[in-house]
Amino acid sequence: MSSVYARNRHLSSFEFFTTAVALRAEIVRLVTSQAVPKSYRFVLSVPMAETARDLVRHLVQSDAFYPNSEHGVKMRKHYMTLAMADCDQLDQDVQLILSLGLPVRPSQFEPVCEMISREIALIKGARDRVKLIGRG
Image 1: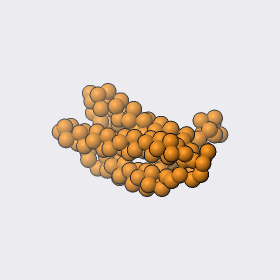
Image 2: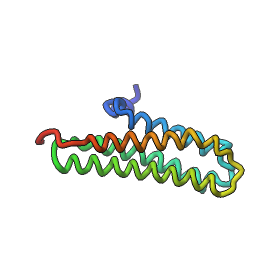
Image 3: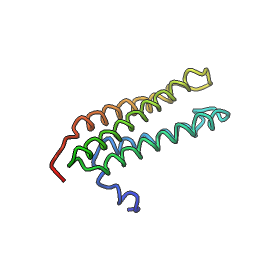
Image 4: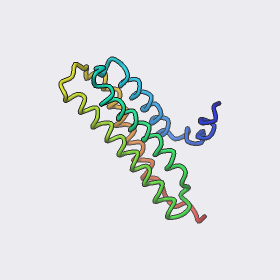
């Protein structure tokens, strides 16, 4: 097991984290493929890949705050909210690609759109369950 995965293995039990990692991989695969015209890849693909990276980073940061204080609860929820905003931005980026009149097949983006919607629901549910669990 690589050190990165070993360091974050406790996160892997959270479905929202594993879904975010899969979503990041799918976004990178999609935007670097023939699905996005080559002339638009730099302008559209780089920001999308960065936003997908931020999504995972914000979830890792949220887990760094143990909810045993008001501050810990607030910060965990804050980073989960940022992760949801990342999902919203990814959805807006997909909508932009589809609305530009580019020679793209919308069906190629459907799985990513479904993953984004699912990820938002998973993070929202997890965020709503963050409660103060004791004093630190």
